[in-house]
Amino acid sequence: MTVTPLQLANAYAALANGGTLYSPRIGQALVSPATGQVQPIDPPVIRHLPVSGQALAYIRHALAGVVTQGTAAGAFGGFPLNQVCVAGKTGTAQLFGKNATSVFASFAPCDHPKYVVLVMVPDSGYGADVAAPAVRQIWDGIYGLEGHQAAVPGGKVPSALPTITSTGTITAPPGYTQSDSGTKGK
Image (tube, rainbow, N blue to C red):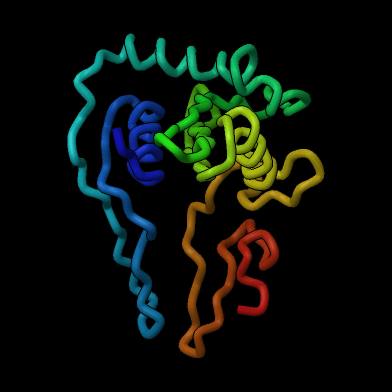
């Protein structure tokens, strides 16, 4: 079986959101620098998973167990799961004659997922040894845990888009500072 990181991330997003598979998009909206007009980008629905809500809930619960008691428990030891519940699965992809590819796919928060984080590291070993620790650091960065500055303060994306002036200056949305949004000096 061959799967790209984007395909696997999209599958986890469908598991997390209740079964809707969307066509991936990078942006949320197009903003005209001249007029400020905002045109939302609504991703098309590809299909709905042919799985009951009860089965999806069971899978989500099992994936949360992988982080607390399963193959990813070591990588997430000491992680504040009481603040951010992470659900995921380690994996090791192997090709004959090659070193293993480390894989860890995840979503959070467990009960009301908002984000999917996936890491694939070719030629690196087992998922629990390489990809899962990398994903843990990404979750630390998203939520500002373990001494990291939060990339998404409070775990919530802004309700408004940044503004763009006619000179190209980008201003963070209300509630975000320039350093929070990563637009400092841009």
